[in-house]
Length: 328
Ligand code: NDP
Image 1 (tube, rainbow, N blue to C red):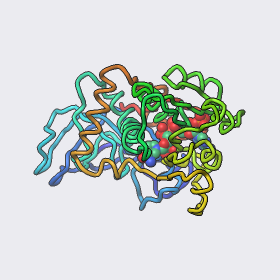
Image 2: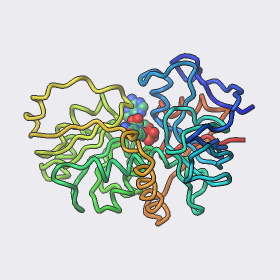
Image 3: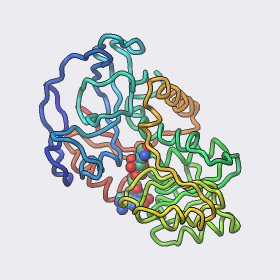
C-alpha cells in the first residue's frame, strides 16, 4: 500500500485527506514512478475548490520527481532506475508512488536534484512557453518591456530570471514590498507593489507612456482591466491563470478600443500534448537551470502530512518561489 492525498468533494483545505491506495503495474505506454518530492502549484487549489472540476474521488497535484520503478509495454525513453520528473495530467502527484502515462515524464539530468525537479517542471515549462511561444505578432526583442504579475511566486521567480537571460525588461508586480525586492533580486528590471500602487500608472511611467509589448496575467479578476491599459498598440495580453478569480466575459470591440490588442488564454497542457514537444521544452528548461541562469527557489517545504497547511499558506499569499511536499 502507498500513501496518497485524495479529495472526496470540492471544498477547503480540510478536504485533502491522506489515504492508503493500491498501486498496480503499468499498462502499455505507462510507468510506475516512486516519488522523492512533489511540487505544489496554484492549479492544485483550483482543482481542490472546483474552479477546475474533477470527478470524485480525485487525486491532487500535477508535478513530482522520483525514480522509475516499472515500465509498461512500448515505453522506450525510460527504464527502471531512471531519475525522472514531470508536469502532467491527470491530477494525482501528491502521493508516494503512482502509475501514469510515460509520455509526459522526462529523465532528470544528474545535476538536478529530485527536490529541484519537483519544484520546477510545471512552473518552469510554463515560464518556457510564456516567454518563448506565446509571442506577440511583432515578436519579442532584447530590451522590450513586458509586465509579469505575481512575479515573486513559483512561475514568477523563474520568469523573472529567464526574461533577464533573454534580455527582456520584465516589470514584475507583487503583493508586498518584500516580494518586490525578491523579484528585483531575481532579475526583474522594475517591481511594483500592486497592493498599494496603481500598477497601470507606474507601467506608463516606466515605459515613457508607451506601454509594454506583453502582459502575462495569472491573477485574473483583480488585475484584468488595468492590465489591458498597460499594453502598447498591437500588444499581447496572455491570460494564464485566475488566482484572484476568473476573468469576466469580454466583448471583442474592446480590443480595438484598447489599441488593436491581441488576447490569448494559454494552458501548459496544450504545449506538452506530445512527447516530442514535452522533451524539447524540458531540454530547454534543464539547460537554463544547469547553466545557472535560472535558479529554482524552494522557499517552502511541507511534509505530505501537512498538505492542508501548505494549501492554506499558498492561498493566503504567504509563499514565495516554489513549494514542495517532502516524502518520508
Ligand atoms: P504562485 O506561487 O504564483 O501563487 C499565486 C500568487 O498569486 C500569490 O502568491 C499571489 O502573489 C498572487 N495572487 C494575487 N491575487 C491573489 C489572490 N486573491 N489569492 C491568492 N493569490 C493571489 O502560484 P504558481 O506559481 O503555482 O502559479 C502562478 C499562476 O500561474 C497561478 O495563477 C496558476 O494557476 C498559473 N499557472 C497557469 C498555467 C497555465 O499553463 N495556464 C501553468 C502554471 C501556472 P502576490 O501576493 O504577490 O500577489
